[in-house]
Image (tube, rainbow, N blue to C red; front, side, top):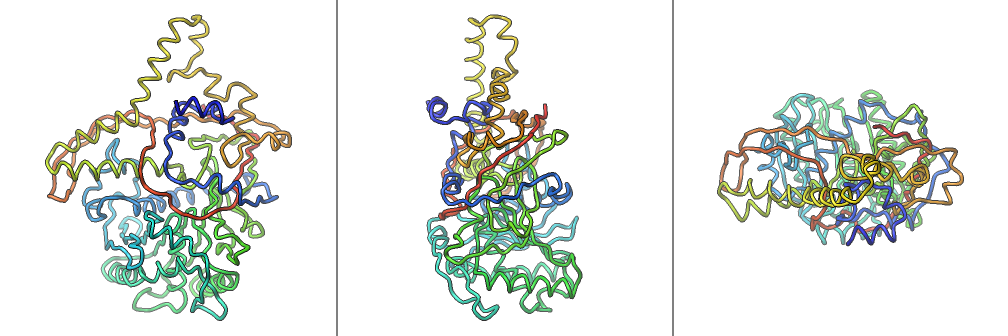
Length: 504
C-alpha cells in the first residue's frame, strides 16, 4: 500500500528499482531532505572530474566511516570487539566493515552530559589510534543539538562556540583524554584519527582544537600525525573561532610538515545537516575546502564555495556512475545504509536479551530473511501471475528480479532524464531539466554480494557461544526505531547529474 501511494504522489518513484523503493518506503531515521530543500543555498560552481579526490583517499575515508558508524550501535562496545569475527559474517551487522578487522579496543565510555557514547581503538596494521564519537541517538542529545546560542571559547578573544555541542564535549573530554593517553602509552602510534558522523563530527572538531592549542608532550608526542574525518557534521562555531582553527592547523603544519594535520569534512547530497546552524545565526563552516559525496563519488569543494550544501555535478560519458542510493540523505555516507546497520544491531540486542542460550542466532537470521528479503518472494509471485497473462515477447523483456527492463532503467529516455535531475526530496526537478546539456542512463541496480558461510564465537552478556553462519541473499528493508541524528534545520542539497552513464 505504501509503495502504491508513493507511486501516485512521488514523481521519481517509478524510476527506482524495487529494492530501492522498498528501502526508501521503510526509512525511519531523519534524513533531512525536506529541511535541506527549505533552508538551502546552491553553489554556482559545477563539480567535475577535475574535482574528484583520489581512490585511495575515498577508501581511507570509507574505513574511518566504519568506526564513526560503529559508535551508534546498541550493543556494548567491548562485546563488539570481542566478537568481530562473528559479527562480520554474512547477514550480520558488520559484514561490510572490513576496516575493523584486527582492531583492538582501548576504551569505551559515555559522557557526563547527555551520555554521548564514544570509544578509542587501535589499528595495528596502519598504526592508527582511532577516536570515534557517536552522533545523536537520544532526546537529551537532540535537545543539546538545538541549543544554537553561543558562548565564549577559550582558544581566543571573541571566539564563540555552539553551547549544546560545547556542553556535551566538556562532559566527554576527560574520558577521551584518558583513553588517548592510554593508547599512546601502550601502542605504537603514528597517527591519531578523530572521526564521527553528525553530532559526533562536531565534537571531534572541539577535541581537535584542544589537541592543537598547546600540544601536551605527555599526551600527543611532537610530530604525531592527526587526521580529522567528519561525515555530515553541523557547524560548531562563529567566524572568529573558524579563523583561529585554521591558524592552529597552519601552525601545526609549519612545525611538523604539510601532512601532519589533515582535515576531511564530508558533506553529502541531500543532507542539510552540514549547513546548520544557519549562517544568519552567526555560525560558519570550519573546513576551508570540504568534500562532497554524491552518486558514490567524492569531490573536493573549492574554498570559495565551502559554505554551500548543494552543487551541480557533471560526469563525462567516460565516467560511469553506480548509484545505490540515488536520493542521498543524512544516513547514506560512504555508499552504506546506516539504517540497515542500526536495524540489525537492534535486532541482535533484542534477541540476545530474550535468549541468553544458543537459540538467538537462528531467530536473528530468520528475522533478517523475513524482514529484509521476504518482499522479494512477493515480487516473484506477482511476476509469475503477470507472466501467465502477458504476451511471451513482453515477458521475455523482463529482468531477473521481476522488474521490466524499462522500469529498472528509468522507463526509457524520459525516465532517465528525470533521474538525472533530482531535487532534495528525491523527485525530478523539471526546471533544472531544461538547463541540463544532456542526460544518459543512471545505474540503479544494487551491487550483488557474494554469499559466505563461517563459524566463530560471539561474546554475550552471559559468556561466549559458538555459532554457525548461513548464506545471504540481497534485499533491503528499513524498520529501526532509532531516532534521528540531528534535530536541526539544514542547507539545501539538490543535485543535477549531467551526462551520467549506466554501469551494467
